[in-house]
Image (cartoon, rainbow, N blue to C red):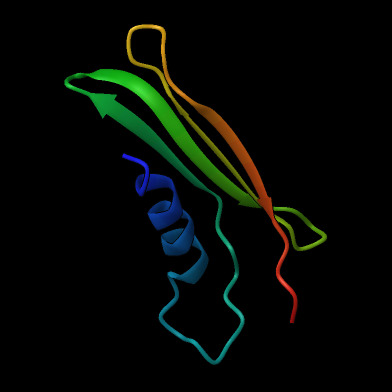
Length: 75
């Protein structure tokens, strides 16, 4: 479970077919299911000033993390 968020972050940052061109970042919104019920979400977006924002929340019987991350990449 602790490796899910880093894997999702890497997947959303580097999922591009053309490595030469700068890809247009598309906002990603995922729903996390536990069985057949919604148990959380993962959202990623890019701001106009180039920052990447990630929000992950998972709730199982009233427990679970809420994580927010901002990533700033240099050239």
